[in-house]
Image 1 (spheres, helix red, strand yellow):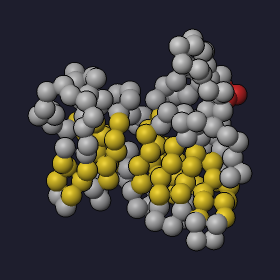
Image 2 (cartoon, rainbow, N blue to C red):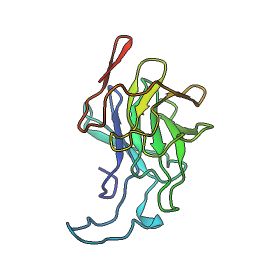
Image 3 (tube, rainbow, N blue to C red):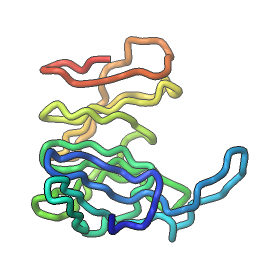
Image 4 (cartoon, helix red, strand yellow):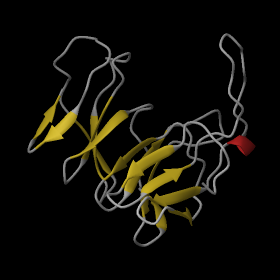
Length: 174
């Protein structure tokens, strides 16, 4: 890879390439240590695409901001990234990268709540949910064409851990 070693990068599979963006170049923090960071310099904006058929990498244009601890989803055309606010080095934003145009864009609205997880594309919108550790927070869907966020219905299950989610035909399945 042409990228510096890193952790917590965001990646998606497009069907022909793996897109990898951002992360943290901070050295790993040993168990039970009280590490502080990463610093702004340890949050890269670079990315690369790997094509396994040609066994070749190509560099991507820099993201508009650092992309650490982001949630990444492939829509069939774009990689959509939700970036939470991070220690003042990364602002909350909704970013999209189109590999065919080799171009980034920022959607008009950041994520409505921090740390939305998942991200299941249903052909029209991306469905996101909250961590089971935060059942008081809402689940949301995003229309990446307009950048519009919509609150979705309450999760019917009690607080649990290790759920699995997917989209099948016209249903979001837990």
